[in-house]
Amino acid sequence: MPSVRCHDCGRSFPFRERKRCACGEPLRFEPRELPRWPDSSNPGMWRYADLLPVDAPSGIGAAAGGTPMVRTPRLDVGGVRLFLKDEGRNPTGSFKDRGSAVAAAYAAENGIDRLGTVSHGNMAMSTAANAAGAGLDCTVCVPSDIPEERLSHIARYGPEILRIEGDYGRLYEASLELEGIEFVNSDTPLRVAGQKTVALEICEAFSPEIPDAIVLPVSSGGQLSGIWRALSELREADLIESVPRLYACQAAACAPIVRAFEAGEESVSAVEGGETIAYSIANADPPSGNRALGALRDTDGGAVAVPDEETRAARKRLAREGGFRVEASSAVAYAGLERLVERDEIASDERVVTVLTGSGFTESDGAAVDARTIPLDELADRFGRSA
Image (cartoon, rainbow, N blue to C red; front, side, top):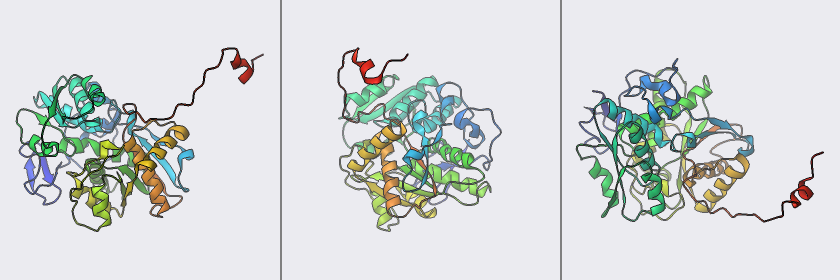
């Protein structure tokens, strides 16, 4: 059985003995071996199967990762050379498929017949889809007041959906104590193991160099933590000499990690979250907040809070100048990059990867529609007729 280690105190446990350390911090898998650039025919993120706690699966899980990194000069900001890591190309449209695929593969390999998650967005859809693809049952716990529109996107994969009354914030911890089901929440070891592969893909694409910075939206801190861990392992294996600076972007209405970073605090405290269009990253008490804070400081990175009006403008620019339809949380990262350039934290000519964590096909962005009706015969008058 693979072992997991605490990020904070260093204690190790057999996996499945504990989901979280007694000190309260998240656990991570010990790598089976140090990373190397693989010579593998496996698709997507499964190029790195030797670094994961499971073997490459079949079905939808096999399609996770391997997302394109798109160079779009029209979207450059202040002379920065921008590369967009388009995680919306994953099977259910978000980076969550990386962790869900690992979790489903692990469950299938080890005789676990039900996955669960605490989510009302991308993670719920991803967990349900990957469970279905692996022939597993799935339970999704959502808040009792979730809009029906969001539920419909989850329900199409056939999971059991439980509306939870009471303190939804306590549900995360409560789910880790349940037996007979493998909960794969935002920073559980299986999920983070899969999510760190995005950093492996980025660095392999730039090899033998590295990007100067990676900018991404942050909610629980699980993805940022996974990226940081992957970068640390790559440096330990001498595959990179240094690590990119990491920058966390959050919605201004709910930015506990940004607040702790700017205040110079050693840990992240819960905040009173407000309403934001970037609801999928509005985590007022991020379970991996302390680990995320450590990642920012270890890499000499930073953190930025973005108001909704800048998020809307960024989403519009990504669509109209780049052709990317992204959810609001992805647009937060692009708007955050603009702020970081304005603050001279990222310099012109630096190579920056911004992670677009999810597509916007399940969100309505309220874009104004400029359309008019014309007679068919008017088309020729408008554009001319071919000879």
